[in-house]
Length: 156
Image 1 (cartoon, rainbow, N blue to C red):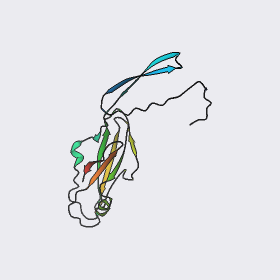
Image 2: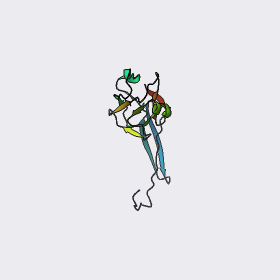
Image 3: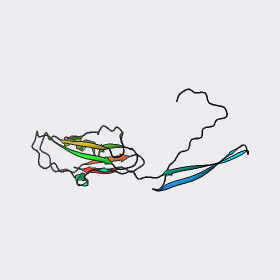
Image 4: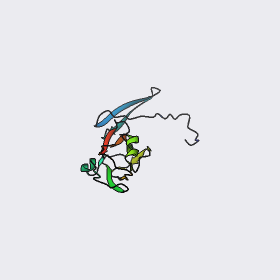
């Protein structure tokens, strides 16, 4: 915060908005200044859904098919933010050990938070490089959004 001198007659009051429902909000706050002045301050806001999803819902189930040992197959699955505001989230494998054993990797699996702006698309590249013969497997890429329960995004 910059070092500024504040007017001793100034008071800053932070107001935090945490909507509980998806709807428009309007609230009147009455300010009383030493009994001399009364001001009604109207505060408005809107609870909006976080809508982060795959651009093509059919890609929620990704099948690499049969890949030869030593092969290298990469598939791209676009993720889109259909919310009105930026969304902060993380992508992670459902089972890190199994992902390594199956020689699977994907972009943005480093556990860092990603911020996706409204209508922005994030391509997720999923790479399969089998080093040995593997039995069939089912693994998930999980989506962990702020203030929401983690959920499976893509099943491989």
